[in-house]
Length: 217
Image (cartoon, rainbow, N blue to C red; front, side, top):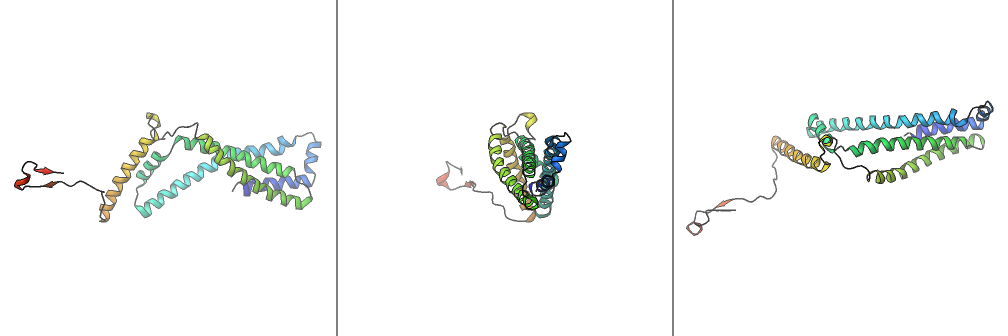
């Protein structure tokens, strides 16, 4: 979304200024193009990306809680408890770091394409299209590389259990037990039969032949 909207607008603005020789006029006044035109745009996207990522994540969690409440009758406190169990500190750190890096990449590519426009109005349209395609391709490639590298530096520490030094595996085990308990309660409330899995049933034999073993399993 940022590459298609903000990145394209950056490229179109700088490309138009390049074609109309406004950038040369700024340089003739003694101002540097990087400090006047490029740096403010890169800083804007650098700080905008983490904010946008945080808002989108919160909106996704809120929408998921509404759907879980409407279709599966999952209470909000229990849903938030499951979210805290599943959320890892590594996810928070890698999410913020990748959003910062992607903001810089999109802004750098957009500004570079805009400042290298040639050929008049047709060149502006070509540079805008090239900026969007290049930014999306680079972000997709860097995302997998950063995810693989960052997983090697941060452990799977659960947010809920991090103050006590518990690893995320215990949090997942507790979550599985709570989910199984909730499914059992939900199926009993709906009157559906519950499959508790294979169990060993105790059989009592009172025949004279089995007088030595009264109860067998």
